[in-house]
Length: 178
Image (cartoon, rainbow, N blue to C red):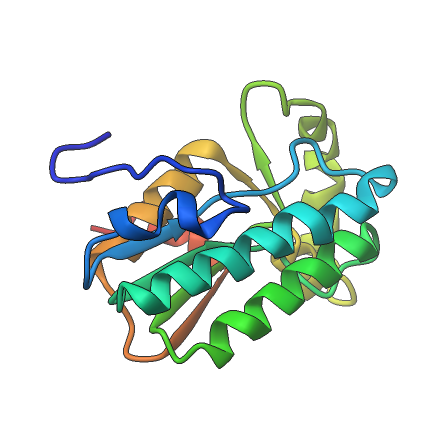
């Protein structure tokens, strides 16, 4: 962990395992989700992704956290409907909590073990060149692990007063902004 950051261990689905260890006024970063999501894992999106947000919000409210950061997914999207639905519901719950929050919406994060989408880069480039697909290609663009980490760090540094949604184009620019 970086200097000044304190991780809290516990079972993300069992709030009582970490509730007493989240400091009052902390920044809570939620990064829990089903590994390698795919259509066959639809039930897990509710039982893990969404359930962990419910548990985290319970703990965050009790600790009166100052900022809740959630790694969501770009939406609407043409595939992975159950995954997107769980993430949209999680965002709704976060907004209803009244906790200041930043919602990051990458579509796909490139990195170790996640390299096959590099094959899609030419198609994304072409789609961004065409007026009819430019906006969707930009919103569903691919980001690198370095870009999402930099954007998460920037989220920690700048808590919003309410809910802030950061989409792919801004994730990409935040990684370079100082």
